[in-house]
Structure formats: structure tokens, C-alpha cells
Image (cartoon, rainbow, N blue to C red; front, side, top):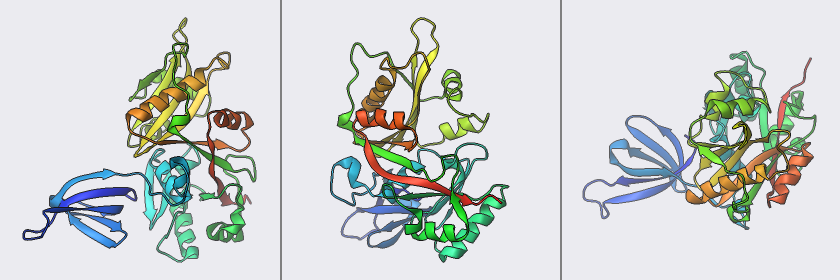
Length: 326
């Protein structure tokens, strides 16, 4: 739902062609039909007529290499499918997410496009939705590099309601979304530490993940495994067998996302992080992907320097807006 798809379906008997394709956004689906919003209008397709369907990458909206051509909203929508909340709902094109106790992305509204209500009523709806779940409302607001939320329609409205920039990051700091072309990553070599990729979340990987951030038992596992597809990369110490480096790869049409890259203190500066990212690059090439994305807080200077060293550049930013604490 809400993703860009191409659907091939049979035309009625007597039509000039036997089948045709429609490209657009999947707006609804049930046991009887699919509704795809195309450039030429809304198309309702009986499910019995569907021959094939698949997700497709976001469309290019500007000039430049593959990792720069996609627009901010389209990349945000794609990234949201790589980090899926336990409960999700839609208000028009806005995405509402709730996963109590685990990460801002999984507990915030993503206001992309048209909510189908006037802005004030849409925000009222979001606030009510979160408070019914015992949570304070929070918005993940994307924008151009270094943007001021007051310069956006949604941001200005929220600031007028006494929302402030916060939500787990230093006040006023942006989260950077950085992207890179797949060809920019260095290849694995014979000197690289061995990297294991597993489609299943193993206990050893989760234990290592918990050493770098808070884990909510029974919740974290569901978010980490909730995307369309993911690989859990790890590096083990050859002497002890202990996991010393990890990352999660989210799989999308044409894109790969990198989450949770971490190397155990004492094993850093040995090429482990680079090897893990290179292994993700190899898996991405095997899946015909062209570009990668990561998300890193602006105050993480060391992390930003690492990604810049791998030719990642800043695509756009986002920040969190939440009601001012009384």
C-alpha cells in the first residue's frame, strides 16, 4: 500500500490487445480488486485479471546520477518500507506509525503528500490517533539539506501549535539521509574479514545490536524483520567466535538501506565496518540495485566522516517535531 508498482492484467474479451500494464501507486487492495493511481487517473483492476505485479523503484524527478535523481518524498516513502512499525495506518498519503518504546521512526507520523483533510484537521487526527495509543504525537518532517521547519507548510503549522524540534536527537539537529551509487563501494579483498549474511535474525546478532542501542524484547525483533526483505550481516572474531561487527541491509526495488552498523570497541580500525558495507554492496549488485541510503544524526561527526569516505553524500535531511513539554 502506497508503494510504486507495475501491474500487468488481462483486458476484456474482444479488446485489441490481450493484456496491458499500468504503472503507478497502489492505493488500495482487497480480495476483489486493486486500485492503482497512475499518471492518467485511477485504475481499478479485478484481481482475477492480474497476470503479474511487482514493486518498482521511485521515479527520477531531477537530473544527476541514480542516487541523486529520486526526490525527497519518494526516497522517504521507500525508506519507510525498510523500517516498518508494529502498527501502521494511513491518512491519505500520510503514514502513521506506532511501536511503543523503540525508535523515533517507528513512533512518528510521516507527512508526505496529501492527507485528504485540511492541514489543521489532519494534525488533529494524528494527535488523536497517538493519544488513543497512550503516546505523545510526533512528526518526522523531511526537507532539503539544512532546511528550517518554519519554511515548510507542515512545519510552520506544527510550530504554531507549540511543537518543538526534539525526539531523541540534540535540539535543532537534523538527521542526514546520505546516498551513494553502488559502484562507489570498495570491493571485498582477500584481506577483508569474512562477512556472514543471514536472512534470519540470529540471537548472536541481536545481542550485538543490543550493545549499541536499547532493545525492547519482543518489539525490536519484529521491527528488524518487518520489511519486505532484509539481510543481517555480521563479522565474528576468528579466535573467540564472538560477533564483533554487524549491520542490517534493507532490500528495496533498486535500492539498499543500511541500518545499525556497529563494530565492537577494541575491534575498530581493522576494516570491519568497511568490509560489512562492501558485503552489502555485493548483495545489492546480486539483486540489481543501483544505489544505497543510510541515515545518520548530524551530531555524529565520526559517522558522517566514515560515510563520506565511502562516497556517500547528503541527499536530504529530516527532523522530529513533538509538542513542547509542559
